[in-house]
Image (cartoon, rainbow over all chains, first blue to last red; front, side):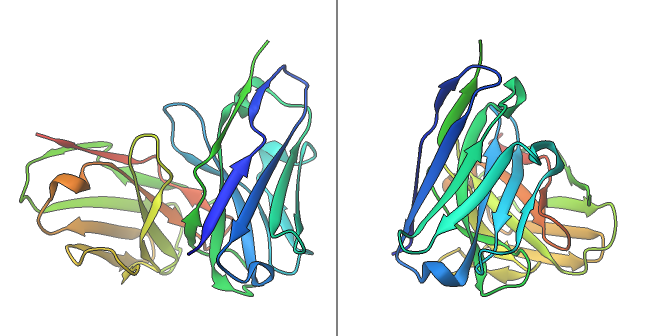
Amino acid sequence: QVQLVESGGGVVQPGGSLRLSCAASGFMFSKYGLHWVRQAPGKGLEWVAVILYDGKNIYYRDAVKGRFTISRDNSKNTVYLQMNSLKVEDTAVYYCAKDSLEEAAGTNSFDYWGQGTLVTVSS
Amino acid sequence: DVQLTQSPSTLSASIGDRVTITCRASQSIRRWLTWYQQKPGKAPKLLIYETSFLQDGVPSRFSGSGSGTEFTLTISSLQPDDFATYYCQQFSDFPTFGQGTRLEIK
């Protein structure tokens, strides 16, 4: 069965860095886009970034451009989110989510999600 | 960015009720709309994709309809397991979500 397991969250000061990982299993990892979606405490869902199946097409929401970097290692079935210059407003649970369509040129529904990892940015 | 507005923000209903949640888009998204259910402390769960297609394993009491800028999620007969928060999401452009509708027990 499909599993996505995030790790790497924690408490960091403003301006600091964290690297999140999402280990995937149960599907052909190299054929699917992978997303990061976040949810601030008590708030709604917010898409953060996607890396398409080819690893070449990458997109970010404006608020994280230049600070966050998404990458994937198909040999390890893992997607990463490097977060630099963190701000208090980046505090959230970060979910890894799998795109629903194989070898898709764009984004689609998210058919599987991890359990999330909490990132807290606070002084 | 495409903005999605859900209504109502909170909905109180009883077991067996038929309920409808609306999602309006700021511009046409054709049928590129998804619905998710989220329970406290859990990840969202995909219910309906491309407006009206039921994800495998989702009960048939859930249904979706719409096109363009107006969409609805209907639960035909509420069950205890359905009390949760529901989000719509569009993928006509970079993904965006509605603000959520909390479905609570009356």
